[in-house]
Image (tube, rainbow, N blue to C red; front, side):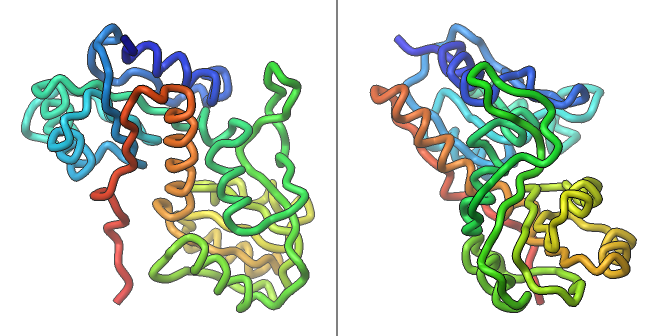
Length: 262
């Protein structure tokens, strides 16, 4: 019998807890660690469509990148996250998340993003340490693409990630050395700049950060939080399937980007 704890232990080998940021909430967010599991749903977020999809599928475990509970207070039907917690608990569904540990881990969110965008010679920007195999880990990745005009690279990013649109600023430079940070990594832009990158792909970029990039002469592309992180969920699902062939591991078909471009 495979349990929730067995899955959590495996995720620990993929994205060890020591790689997370100190403030982060990871691991078993709700449910019984000894509960048996036969069906797992994976989604980027524990939002209502994923929670209800897990319920409809009869899954015993929901695994996401982002945490179920960020706010303090009561678990009731007066908040969005409270309703989601209640739905999971009332239907016997456990929830596990791997957040900044999966961002930083070798083969995690940012390695997958770099590979999805076709980067070569991928390395870690400012490694935080090395894992038990001696591999460096950390938040950002950088690599190279054949030197090209920015509009060509923009088209590649949009197509590779399936975005409806991109926000960007041109540094009036061709694209060659690229850094990536899935999700809200705009505050780490200067790390990419000082690493010698001419282009940075991330999400949730603020107005002043775009302006800073413009004045530095750096190309910065906001490809959206969902689209820069979601590709790694399939990779994680495949790893779980390979480790637990007796389980049904399903990638969410309901959870998607909610933001649109008019």
